[in-house]
Image 1: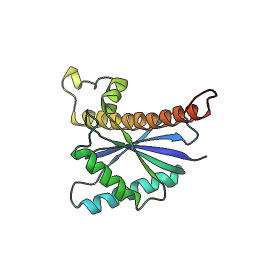
Image 2: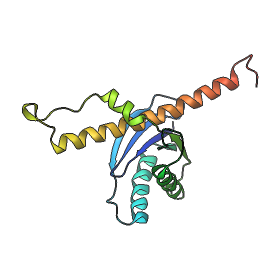
Image 3: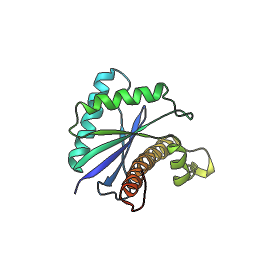
Image 4: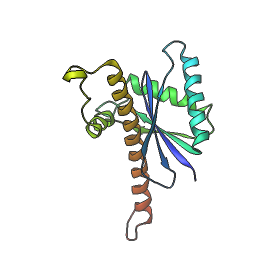
Length: 167
């Protein structure tokens, strides 16, 4: 059975989720550290190698990447960067890449995961705790992005196959 990978792309990390291609539930899979922001071409190459490994390990047939649109639905600078990244990655990976609106996914992920744990003796969280929390949020956001895409496909397929629906 093949799977679909979901990606929440960030500057420092990529949250990754997985679901069966037959429409199973999206589950958080991993958080990948991205290369330091030096040469963009080398950074994309490093990202492509990481994703190629996951595509092979999980027999992925597609990747769904979250597109960070602005609240109005317009594409801002971050969406343009994400679109360019997806185009560059798409030339090196053997699977198609789909973009999915990711507005509010990080906020929803934070609601699902709950607040960050406090540090020792109730103090502020340590750097390690903050990084672990952010990594978990990235994975959960990737799962939300992927599940949104799967739900939209399921709804579209239901509309096409429902008797009595007019077009």
